[in-house]
Length: 568
Ligand code: FES
Image (cartoon, rainbow, N blue to C red; front, side, top):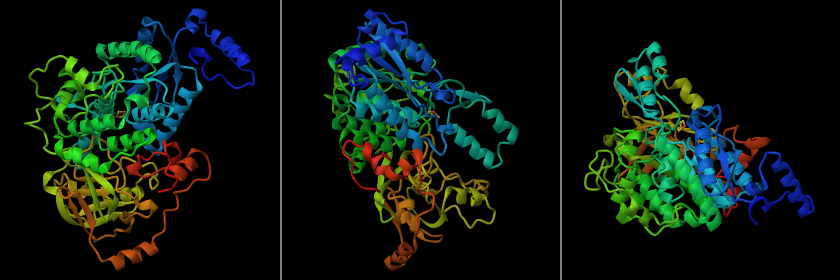
């Protein structure tokens, strides 16, 4: 079935169902000629709460232009929109809801292909998860990064500089009036965070995976190229409707491997690991964390963007976007992967403009960081894994043994971290428990534990910090994340107590708690789950009943292509 005849509502009389559908769609003013065209759905993820999607109406207009220039009928439809700062308790808590919305609306409504418009951190993963499950021909475009702001002559970007300047405010170096003034300068317009945060990471890995036309990831939100890319996306959407090119034809195990390579080479956000694991689960395979580690060991970090480097996404766009990265790591990529353009990844790299001298994307021989941005850790503290973004950590802390200072929850941390009487020293290890997928809930980006105020005032900039939470890709430090199993489901992280000794050895890929087994076993017997990890109704009940751990992308078990049939 094609066009308006696809998936009619069930009234027990298919002819009547189609007649009724046409009667209502004609109320929109469409002609019969328009209704006979390929129908191209366009997800409208605009929201008054989502500044990262502020330019979605303009992008929709450009996509529509492309669709109509190619003879299709564009039909936009709304979807849930999630912004990081406007999602209680966390955006991660809601990502799966958006993915379900995307899957069901793509499947329920008649469309021969769909243009997915994402941008802010969780929206691209949610759209790709939904599209992978619905498997209707789909093409992604993004809202694009913000341009940079400035303060007292210094170039600023959300949210690396949000965190850095807030840290200075906490340390007493920036007063109330100035920090208020700065809040108006960090995000100076529409678009996504312009450092190598999760939004930039997911845009780049999605392009590498082949779901977006070349060049789309890095074009700034306000650039005319952004609209031309959207128009081209609309044109291509009509073609894939005819070709039947589906998400599962493009997102394969090989293209996922390319995405992991790019994640490492761009110094991408650790959140990318969680989201790619969730997308892989929708496609029918598992993300292999050992492979991520192996690929990382042989893939240097090449992109000189904050927080690991110095530039911003608009600089990456000016030097060619993702293409120079792909060109540099070409020998590591599966070049025969199909992309949504209809050409292979290798053909796309070959047809790109020649390289020129620039300082944003380094050569493999002169990397920002040798040996990958993200490392997998295992050990008795993280039997199912944990990760660290070593490229953004203080090198001296990558091998460290320290005394645990434990916070049992986010609330406990908020109450005590700045207590002048807190027994903490710079060489200690800060441990945050119960901030994982179920514990918080929603695995907040709380892994960037603040440096206790009394140490910050002494000039301490980094400490080893360990949690089952996530971290914004815009953050930095010796921060161990995604410890699994999380504390709230009985993971060893929940057994750590003040004064325990913890060893981190990133080169060896180890995270271990010292202590005798009998003592740990006794603590395990005493352990009880936190009271809030259940809900009796609504989406929260679904979330608590079904959410999986970080290594499964925090997806709901029943949404996976092949449910595991178990709870974490
Ligand atoms: Fe939307 Fe950073 S808050 S991309």
